[in-house]
Image 1 (spheres, one colour):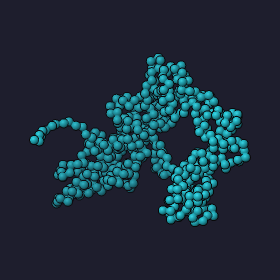
Image 2: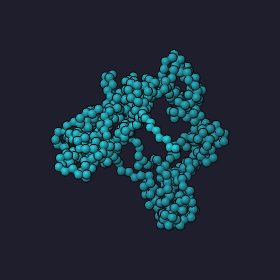
Image 3: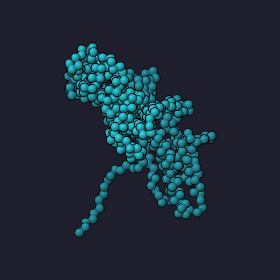
Image 4: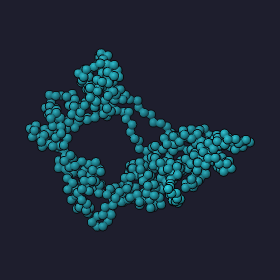
Length: 490
């Protein structure tokens, strides 16, 4: 027999607006402009004031409590369930731009920076191929090889696969030997090393373009051909014995190999998109007083569309309100609600960012004044969350992918968070301080006899930092510093 019963549960669920705000909070300034453009495309009731010509004075968008929730799901309600005046605050401007952006951004700064027109890596290779007196078949093979190269200039596809591609895509019946011959032709193109299938082949192509009668070049070719693994692992003593060289000769050979380019494609590639770092915050030192400003350059001023306001007003005054008219009113209402929520969400985002960064600045005040890593205090997410009265996850989202520009450089916010290490005197210091000391000692070490992790551990203990060797190794790896053997130089 089926039993039925009633249960009451108390659950916490995030509203769609809260979820959207969380996503908006973790977007860095460099991506905020894209996010706003997406919203402008999806919601016709939202307008970008920088794209509209407005000659009359605008009223400021009324301040709202950031904790207010806007319910967009109230479909089927009557016309009198919402106040039309909420939508008729004409030209409701989002004033966060003028409030926080004190960095001197004007119309001149908003102009696009011209980019120099330059041929790409593949266009350069194609231009060299065009100059050769080739048959149509060889030209098609060469074009297929160039198109199969990776961005770093290597050919990582088997010759047999290229032959199949030519047969199926271009109806060119070629033998493997013909493709191999054309590959050798392309390996003679600039930059040297292009078209190689392995690192060894890439280095040999570059060395064989030099004066092969030079004794140093000859021995460099021998090293790359027969002892590349020993060279990469810096087993220099084995190389000296195998090639009967002294330290001076080996230094010349190693120096010649190090001049070679292991990734020839990268040297000419100009179309590679690099992530541009745009700081979200600016900190200035005003005679010993730190001033924090929020960069809002990528956030245009937004307002609710006047045409949608007038449309809503027109529907409200209609004498007959049939089913289609009510559906139209609900659609307009939903778009207006969504636009007003998005404007408020942008404002709340700016306030949250500013509040969190201000707490970080106050916590690490000495560092922002001096720029010395040794002045960084141990700080975890909970420290900032407790200060601003917000959740740890909120602080984490703010710190994620956000940058601050100071007089001492531009820093990722995550870099200010670190664990505490206790010294022999009982004082707690940041592990950033320990990493700085490690970096200084490794930078000053004798590269012919680099400091091993055990020696670095002893140095730190003498300085009062009682940490284990495995911790030293962990910090060294976090700083992308190789082990002592790989730091050795001749």
